Image (tube, rainbow, N blue to C red; front, side, top):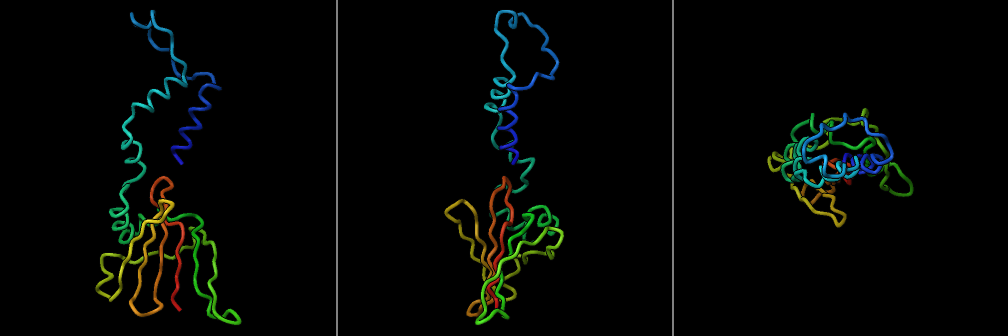
Length: 171
């Protein structure tokens, strides 16, 4: 979102009067034409370090690092879960047979932790599979081998990594 806000701000800069103080004249400025506010903003964006824009807002831009922290830090989970979170699970009471149901859970109603600590899964006999999806998102599957006990967590960059959907296939 900050990138789209920046782009919108750049587009609107030319439509609004400048609220910045007038630049102090220098010997060179008298011979050069003044740049428009939009051109000045574009120039500052073009010369900015691309990593600098990500670091302050995204503490863990690399997914592997993010996942390690996300799975063990509830405070990071609380700030990195979509509102609402799409949650899918098996409805065992459905007729004529169990079926997958989907609901949107408001952030205030999410149960924490939303995901188990991936660093300790092996201690309880569970496996972890991380897969890059075609759209750039990441799928994290946590499962108990040879059972229906499997959950998949889907993360997307918005612009930071965020849990957007979880699917619990356990019956």
